[in-house]
Image (tube, rainbow, N blue to C red):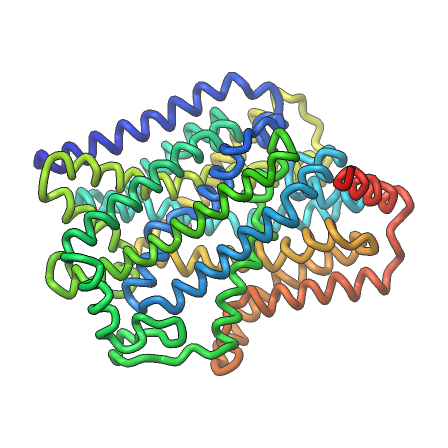
Amino acid sequence: MNTTEIIILGTIIAYLVLMVLVGFIFSRKNENVGDFYLGGRKLGTLVTAMSAEASDMSSWLLLGLPGVAYLTGGAEAGWTAIGLAIGTYLNWLFVAKRLRVYSQRCGAITIPDFFSERYKDRSRLLMGVSALIILIFFVPYTASGFSACGKLFNSLFGWDYHVAMIVSAIIIISYTCTGGFLAASTTDLIQSIVMTVALISIVLFGINSAGGVDNIVDNAESMAGYFSLRHIHNVETGGADKYTVLTIASILAWGLGYFGMPHILLRFMAIKDKNKIKHSRRIASVWVVISMAVAIFIGFIGNYLSHVGKIDTLVGSDSERVVIRIAQYMSEHHAGLAVIAGLVFAGILACTMSTSDSQLLAASSSMSENILKGVFNVKMSDKVSMIVARGVLLVIAALSIILAWDQNSSVFRVVSFAWAGFGATFGPVMLTALFWKRSNRWGAIAGMVVGAVMVFVWKFVIAKQGGIFAIYELLPAFLCALAAIIIVSLVTKAPEKEITEEYDAVKAELHA
């Protein structure tokens, strides 16, 4: 191992030690499962904003998004970013405060809890279905994060992918398992700062290496459809494929996913002061827009550097290593730049860890709190509940490691499918639960089931027919789920008086 690699590794290790220390510090503040899973609803304005967005962006921000931009140009990456930016803002604007108030009145500490208590579902069927959906989609989502960590260390030091992936998973598990929600949220704030430093460092170095922005733009414009939002560059033919209005609409549908993301919605439920959500919304929205724009531009930078031979030409899923390649190139120039490169690599770990820890907590709570205690009515003391929660977290992490074993899987594609799953199953239910008084538990259950089934059917059956059907599965699945909720709610019994009175009380509190 040469001096540069030692400096990079030392920087990464220092960062990882800090994350584990945060976990142990906050482990002392977990007095019950409410603290472990929701932090006692004590999150401040800045922590809420940045932990929500850091847990949202994941390895997708520094690996997936630049990789797509590197290969095909601005269309897919650009419209995806636009959809996510709109979705982020609308989620904070319409859902955050209402969910914070409603969940506290219900006494809910998880998303399945909220759905069950919102509709007073004493059969616990709604809780069971929603908890099962969380497990189905979060395990592969978490696996994509572990995979990103393995790819990072494999690219950097030539370490065995599987060993690197397992070690990274153990570190994430250690601080999440000890510190719970407060540790995950606090580390998310730190990780968002590291991610920001990483993005800025790569862009400044990349522009300097390219000899200016003009050279990067000229290179992009020289490739058919690359520097466009109406066409996509076809790597195989070198030509341009047109983006139709339907294709653009389906990509913008990424924004619909926010309404159903458990790990983001939990941040809304945990904020200390509901009246400070406006400030959190502004912070979160600005950071998301800037960070995604920078990530896409990094893809353009990487393509230029490959074109002039400063970094390797990347094909297929290897394009997701473009940030890694640029940072490695940076580290070769000076010891000081090697430290910055180490921070970039720590930033890649940061965006991966910030999502994985939140997903592990959400999946763990679904099994221990909602399925074991809620559905099967297993009686446990707070102490035993904490032990079970951590045990379940370990099992889910192990399953994620197994699914991440294939190092050739695409982070972007795995995340897009899981995102569609949550967006279609929980998004319509969350919106109707918060904004439609007439919705009922049968409609909610129907919406979840239809949304989940349609994601799989559209992805693996209908979309393969091509043509107008080759669109992102989130859009048709979301619309089908919403239709199912409305139809089933209207043809079944209206909500009981207890439910409608609580709905009115929440509405009154929001306008007080």
